[in-house]
Length: 180
Image (tube, rainbow, N blue to C red):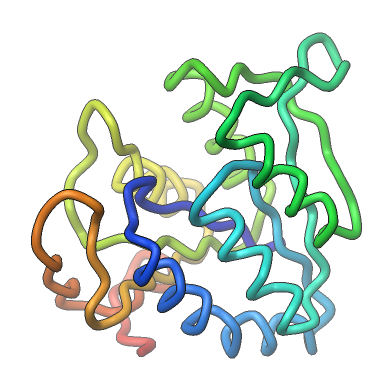
């Protein structure tokens, strides 16, 4: 399985760049018979789902559940979850509360543990009270999951100027290796 995590505040043009960047990477995984894994939500999960579909990669979407029963998905994630379900070949339920940040991080950690590779759409910035991408990258590495960082040239967050690309465009395992 290949999971994806990343910043939640990416601009629409950045999401288009990410989708374009992911397609060839996912096509290689599709030929190897792998599947993509994404937690339902707007923004990056939908870009990943679209890239997976275009690349021919099977997609598994994780929906929130409470005691094993699908939970309510609030707007604006509801429309995105619907699109992901249409793109998916399989759906998994996972007990977490999409309105609770800690619960979402715990869910993302579970996804990371269940995959062999993590695509991190990340500009190299540290985790803060709103964004746990750096934490999830470190978590994946600490659990032996191969991590590949994706940050296309020109990518930016909704608030602020374009971020600089990380010095290493991609990291696999624990040793840095450029994979751009």
